[in-house]
Image 1 (cartoon, rainbow, N blue to C red):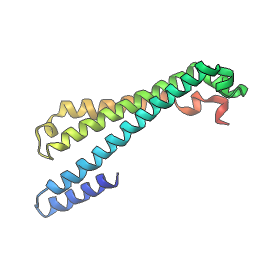
Image 2 (cartoon, helix red, strand yellow):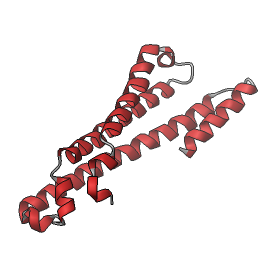
Image 3 (cartoon, rainbow, N blue to C red):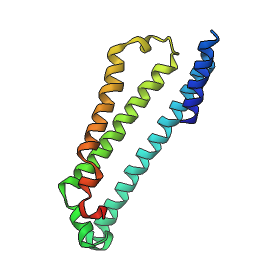
Length: 150
């Protein structure tokens, strides 16, 4: 995020002085690319964690593999918790998709052809973020975790 902020600041200064914007474009693209990379690593680690939990549960059985505290068992078995896991996964993929679009957009510069495509901007910026916020608002942790939040 610091790279993105720096790129935005460089771009604002360059615009005021009627200077070349290529440096700010490169810094912004590097910032967004690093965000895409770290989000991708996060998604891979989440999948790995989920697979390890599933393997452990299959190998040892649910009682030995997972905590059997009554409130945690109740949360894990609720449909709201399953919905929450789905919502977090969906929101992560939507945000990743949006970031990839922004990298492609900025890779062509501030005046690239994708920058002026309103349909792409609305679809890959507005719609994706509205969906991500909506699923996380519906499946908010305070609603889905119930007694485990206490």
